[in-house]
Length: 284
Image (cartoon, rainbow, N blue to C red):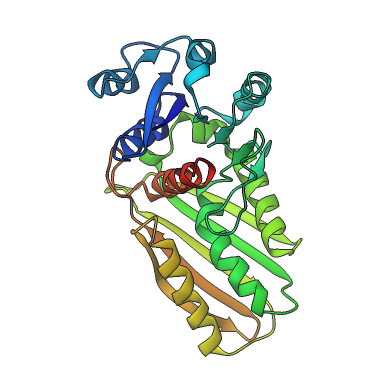
């Protein structure tokens, strides 16, 4: 049995706690937050998981029995957290858009588990778009521009998401460039207050010369099939189509599993599902 520590007690942390509780080979050994009486502390107690309100200081009391830590706080705090965790020989899966560690995308990233590592989960927009973009750019020569616009419900954007908006944009753009080799990248995030809440959708635009529709639709099918292996609610709702002679558009919808977060919060569910994949990859 591998032991995991969760740093943070907000929406993402709680959903991760519930996802980990369903795994037979992994368990959450401790959750570290800042306040008692929060939903995170109450749910941790219900699941028999020790909760500390001393944050990373309290979490380190369990360090000798931890195999990995998940940082579900914010990008600014993660910088200091990583310094402390590294000094204590603990690998971390970073849920924040800090861009401190190595970007991790399921199936696309390799992990060196022989040393202490920092795996950065990029962002929800990055997790949604990069698998599709890398496949497309591999067969589409001379890609000049990539644009990724994600729309999420205001109710699924917690305080951490709002604090990290600037880092979200920058980190996602950098990660897309790293995985595709395209330097001209634009990322936008729309936080929609509509009622009922909207489901997470990401629209992707690629500028290049036109290629075979058969090829791009085959690649889209491959991406959708692979993504569904760890995030079943991943659906390409607008198939790749040419808006004009050199602009390819696609829209992806992500529905969450509903473990703790509402199903419309696919933006949080996809990054958490990718983190569970990373845990299995790192601790195999």
